[in-house]
Length: 405
Ligand SMILES: Nc1nc2c(ncn2[C@@H]2O[C@H](COP(=O)(O)OP(=O)(O)O)[C@@H](O)[C@H]2O)c(=O)[nH]1
Ligand SMILES: [Mg+2]
Image (cartoon, rainbow, N blue to C red):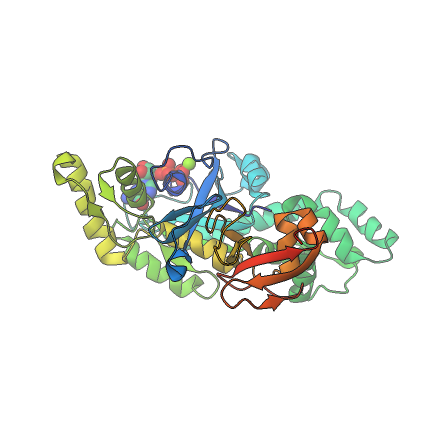
């Protein structure tokens, strides 16, 4: 199952710019099947070190891209419509926003760290708006939306729980099933709010609200993309956000615009730049217009020299690898050549949940491979693992099945 990140936030924080930058093909190659899926849904990439360097082989990536030893693995990203206060009541594009949100597994909250947009997303002089307010407001909006969904038909939900012999967990799980919320998330939220064992008929409105906030935190973890760091007022605001929200959220500086400029320049062959790098190299100075030279100079001085990188790639990596706790494994069919049966070396890099077992991986590759699973073989050590072996980051692994015998 492909995981998806949702870009959320009020209007004009830079969500669409972030989306354009993140989904721009990171290398110039002819036919690549991963581009924009729908207007606001596209493919971004998680960047990891490819094992090709360690094994000292030339690879032939199929499901991903390898740029000079860096594997770019496709993931989905959606640019959710801008959210204004009280969207949950249907204000602005409220309902559209919230519908798109359902499909996301992890949220990237893009805030204007420079403080140059007010709470509704209107322009205001840099430094005049406190972005901490945006974090507070977004948390509340989403919680209120979930609460509203729960309150719809609440009496029926209560009756259903009673019919099911007081099965609060399954009742709530069913009620929220459209939101990509797992059963174990419901259990955890009940535990952490102290509502476990309390009959739904005794829940007060505050209980529903507390549960809504908690289930959002658990099922849709969030990272703060502190955008527009090229504007000098951002620094102080980022310190403020870290002070107030640093324990709860990872606050990561970024400049979506800088990333977009660099990727476009790389696409046109003007610079050499791999998304996430802390530097770029001008390929042909003479081909740059004065305007392009100026833009690159600003990116160098206001973003890379100060922050180290544009932050966009780092945020995507953090969302998938840390918040969603995913790892990368390289399945192969031939452990000596590290290839599939066509001879493609290290063809696939799979992003899977940490804790995935060898047999679960087999099922992901093919239903039949899962059913006829015998063991897994580690290409590095030639060790054999049973079905319950939990895969590790960068495992290069062959699945042996009854069929492949
Ligand atoms: N200075 C600066 N401006 C940015 C950055 N990212 C986006 N913007 C600008 O912010 C405005 C709103 O951007 P947009 O992506 O449309 O925001 P959205 O409404 O959240 O999708 C545009 O004028 C962008 O050029 C950035 O990193 N730095
Ligand atoms: Mg937009």
